[in-house]
Length: 198
Image 1 (tube, helix red, strand yellow):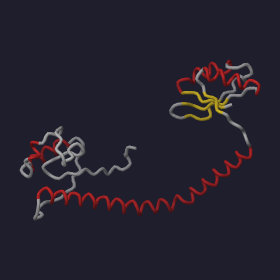
Image 2 (cartoon, rainbow, N blue to C red):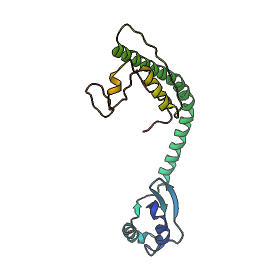
Image 3 (cartoon, one colour):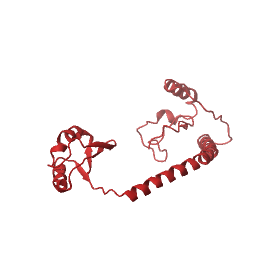
Image 4 (cartoon, rainbow, N blue to C red):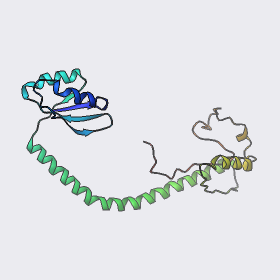
C-alpha cells in the first residue's frame, strides 16, 4: 500500500507503522517520493488487514492512497515517457535557436518602448521644443542613494513641484503610489530577467 506521511511525522511513521495492524510485514516501508510537505511511503501487508490498517493510519494522520498495479499500464506509461523524452531531445535544439532569435527581438522592442516612454513623458512634462538628453545609468547598489541626491540637486530647478510633493500624499492623476516622482524623468530597467518573482 502507499501512504502519504507529513514530513513532521516521519519519525512517528517509522515507529508505529508495524503496529498499526496485525499483518504488516516488518521493515517493509520505503520512501518512494518526497516533496516540500510530505513523503510517499510504501508498506507491505496481508490483504485481510487492509481495512484495519487504513482505519488506524487515518487515526494517526497518515493518508492511505489506493493503488492498483497493472503491468500493461505500467509498460504503456514507460513507453510514453520514452517517447516524450526523445521528442523533447528532438525539439530542444530548434527551440533554443528560435528563443535566441525571438528573445533578442522582444528585448529590442521592450527597450524601444522604454525609450518612447522617456520621450513622451519628457515632452509632456517640459513641453516643446524638445530640449533634453536621455541617458542610461547603471549605478552600484551602494551608490544609488548618493546618485539620487546628486541628480535631485542638479535638476530640482526643472520641476519645483517635485520638492514639495510628499510621497505619502495622493494627488489624482499622478499615480505616486505606483511610481516615485523626481524633477527629472526616470524609468527603472530591470535587466536581470532570471531573478523574476512569480
